[in-house]
Amino acid sequence: MRYLPLCFSLFLLGFSSPAKDSGDAHILTNPFARIPLEADNDAEFKSLQTNQDGAAAGIDCIRGKPDRWIDEGHPEVAKAAFHSLSATNSIEIVTLRTGDRIEILNYGCDSSSVGIRYLGGRDKASLKDLKHWFRIASNELKTIHHLVNRQKGTPFDLANDAKALETAKQNLVLGKEINIEGDGNDFQQARVSVLSVEKSPDKRSVVVISLNRGPL
Image (cartoon, rainbow, N blue to C red):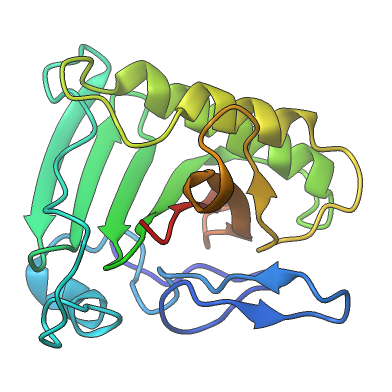
C-alpha cells in the first residue's frame, strides 16, 4: 500500500535548495516531499525527473551518471530496484529482510547530492526528540554503509557521516547541514543533514537524510 507520511517540520516541496532560517543557517528542503512512500514505478518518480535536472535542461553537467550503491547480493537484502531518471538522476530502492525500506536518490548537476529516505520500524519516541532521531539517522547510515557494494563504493564516507550525526549534541536543527571533518576540503567537503522526521500511518519511522558535496 502506498501512502504519504505524516510530516513533522519540513513538509517542503522540491529538491534540495538552500533557504534561510532566522539564524542565517542554510536549511535544505525535502527531495521526497512529493513522492509517496513505497512508490515503485517510473510514473510515480516523474516529479523527480522534472525538478533540478540540469542535463534535461540542456546544461553541461560536471557530475556523471550515478550507479547503484547497495550490493544486491547481500544476504540482508530481500529486494532491490534501480530507476535511471536521467543522465544525472536516479533512485535506488532496497527492501531489507527486516522489512526496512531504503530509497537512495542521486541527483545534482554541478554538485553531488544524495537524498536517503529510510522507512524503519515502529518507534514511540516523540518527533520533537531530535537527539533520538539524529542517533536513529546515524544508525541508518551505518546500515547503508554495511550494505554498500565494496567494489564500487560511494562518493561519501558514510561511516564518517554517521559519526557526525551521532556526536551532534547541540543546536540540532532539521535541514541544517553539518560539515564532515576528514571528508574533503573547502567546496569538496562533504555535508550531512537530517532533513525530516516523520511517522507513517502505521507508526513506522520515516527519516530523510541529505548528503552533499560541491560544487564539483
